[in-house]
Image 1 (cartoon, rainbow, N blue to C red):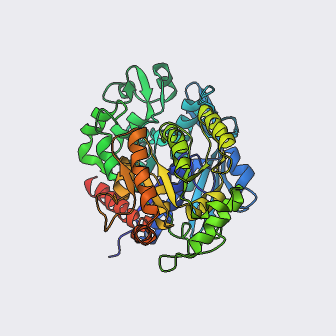
Image 2 (cartoon, rainbow, N blue to C red):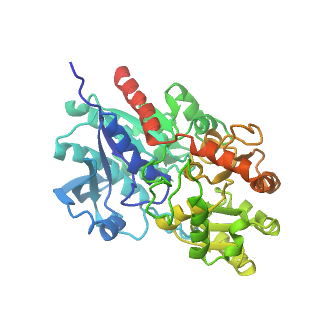
Image 3 (cartoon, rainbow, N blue to C red):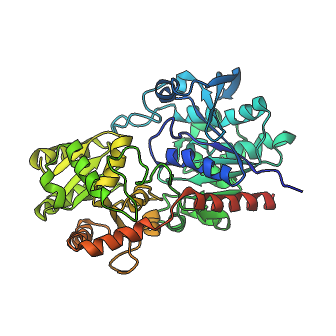
Length: 496
């Protein structure tokens, strides 16, 4: 007898193509499609942000309301919310929670200026989101086998399932899996906020979500979920140590038998130099010549001189933070320029770092270009047009850009941490099979020393091409990652 498909409700605070601040959105935008190919039935639930309304409502005209005036208690309030639905190819249903007072804002979680910080009502916003999961299931009459929740914003689904919803027979057999995308963000709020949750008092203990007298939403997800996954095998090991555990290493070690690292994948259709619509010229592993035209197009787009065509062009894309190692990039930039190199940066973040790079731009206008924004088209042009991609992150749960770079024949230079360590094979250790360059002791000197080795090898065109081809042969598609998630889903169902 044919078994019923596994039904999964993904609960996440962002998703491509609707709203994005980081890699979480890319995962939620891609993983459901790969799971559907494996026979799973996947639905997604996220907030209805202003960004969804303004940027995507016109395109997705089939957005329809499915429930209105639902009352959800948070603290002493009973908030009125609305539920919306759209359908993405290939038939994946996405549901949205409308509460304009909470989600109709310029930014998703808070002002990007560190001096202003997160929204003060983030606890209420995402308690409401988590509690709305129950209402969504009731109003759609659809009860999944698994709630797959992501990061702290969705973590309270786990204790609500255990302590509230399983008393309803329709929820009794539902399991919960938490995926941690970045342990540094935990959703920590004052202990007095616990009353907002309406959870039993024993949940606010050391064995529950209490954390040094505060409420820790992510800890609640870790404790009450059936399984915990994170976004690379190396990161799963690292977060169980004091150095990388951000105070939760003991809790994570206690769940060690249910903690699994699954490497994120990339959308191999979206990120494909042979078909990429953003590129001026397509190329592939069998014909790399078009990559040079992409470099020319990138230089022209950014206003850099074409004299740089034969110089090593380094690039980086992402949030400009010290966690991502942008302070190291700033420090080595003048050395790179003295060695005939050039640098391109795309992204925005900490004001101090952006100001430093603005000064650098003024000082080296023919060697350095910076665009302080998130630009999908330009990100593809950079991956195709650059020679070397820099990712000197202090820590990196997974990282996606190094995998995009490998697929585009752009050689990554990375710090050997988390997913960067899992996905890049060090050329200096494995000359025949290497795909990039790693430095192991975190710091400016180590970073510069390994980048110098990359610059030297850049002059050897035949060897450089071999490294490019090694990287382009790697399979980091979501098809591979989805199979690993499917194994976890099946294990959860067996163990219930």
